[in-house]
Image (tube, rainbow, N blue to C red; front, side, top):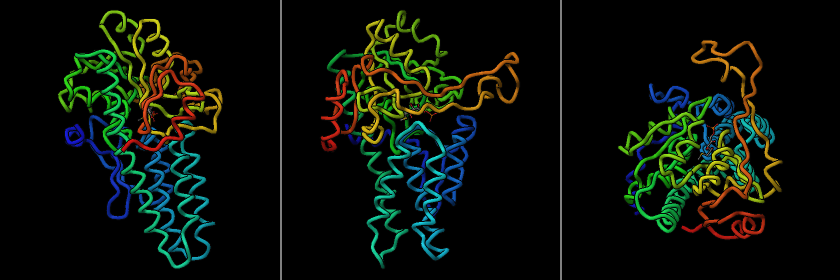
Length: 358
Ligand code: MRU
């Protein structure tokens, strides 16, 4: 199946080429396919903040390349480049707060930087670290897709109606996706009847990005408003909800796009299985529970306006863009290290001690 899965890798959102980071601009998809070129760490931080690039693993990979851009400029400027690079680490760490992959990637780059010896080429070594982060995310997607499909087959058999939220696909990762990787693989294995995609208010990752990715491959997909999910679970024979994650705490609580929590509650009520698919770089063992996960709040204009036109009454609006699903509503967490069924702190700790499966 690995070869089939690799052949299904059609969309790529992050391209490191000619010494610059090229990002497929997710603000304008699916109507325009335009590449946003970043030549400095600050430009990448801004692209993350503005959601030119989004999705937890993609943010982490972009930040790793940003450190390379930063190092190149700091080394060229002469003097203490390591001290100067701290300013770039800082700006990148402030770009978005919830997806831990950003901080995980920055830590990896910082640790690599610390091991660089006198006389070595820092830019080349950091570049090779960033390429390694990118490639290993791609590999993790493949491993998780295989594990996720095995779970679907084992628990429910043929022709599933699956529901997903937000975009956890090629656009959000270095490969062909976490949740969408499992969904793509299930389709290739003949296990899929239809994919139901929540539009994902207010930024429309579902209707603009996920629907575009799936429809582009001829996978049967229907779009629905987020609030239709419970009704669809009741009336359309949905058997699995499959989502990605931005940060998973040590007890298995899962932060993901706002609306995921209510999906999990509804899934439990309707006997629908709930699968979270995320690389181990999304797991934050330093946080005891989801209560400690910082939840990003974005500008109220994302709710109050559509295409720059005011659509709401003159009131304040709350715009938390992630929520936390308690571990006891999660059936499976799929990672490249293996699966945790009905997660808790002990099971998460055991998972993190394992090696990657590929
Ligand atoms: O605000 P976004 O679009 O960055 O949020 C993305 C999500 O919530 C995804 O589900 C998550 O990052 C997993 S992507 C593989």
